[in-house]
Image (cartoon, rainbow, N blue to C red; front, side, top):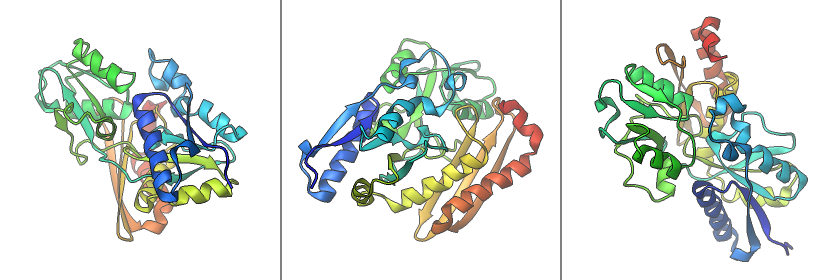
Length: 309
């Protein structure tokens, strides 16, 4: 019988907190548990503290998870809630992604200050983004634009835009929806032209491999189509050694027991890219993602990846 609260680790941004509270509420509903049975533990990560440099210069995605994972491994936390696209493909020993909540809209949202659509920005306009994928896709569509690095929480980026530091920026529509900022986007970008990051729009829960009690509770809130889709996308990323240093897009959808996946890799300047599509059984999600990554790597050839280093 659990007598002390389950401790949920999270970053402290409004979006991270919204995700942690959604996880808590789903666990409460699934198991008939009262709110005092959960404690939200806010931790500061290196990625939160350093906002004046691109993530690629700092070491990539693990910057948003290391402090939280250290407490999860030590037993100070019972579970951790993350944005799935922030998660490295290799996790610390003893930890795994045990559940995914139902996926939100995967599209990227454009927020335009001088024009409502990305394609309508004037020649030479400035667009801010912290994502190498988005930067490469912007350059692919509009090589004339000036692309700069925009880091910070959602409100910070919107403030920078309002101050005139850029003519437009891009954010994940899923995050804006979770924050109730539905009126912010001026355009929602078609995933066919502007494919999302692997795992975009999905909340994941990380726990310890041997914690049967916690993992049994989490199994009740796991969304299986999201689990399979994100498993495929992360396998694609892993096959390409993907991180915040590499422009990679990938999107899988489970329809019944069938999974369809589309992936793209780009050079950072967006001038060259390769695409791949694969289908198969949802139960083979990891194998499909891995095969897609290996196939697109072979298709691109070794010279393609020299610009990623």
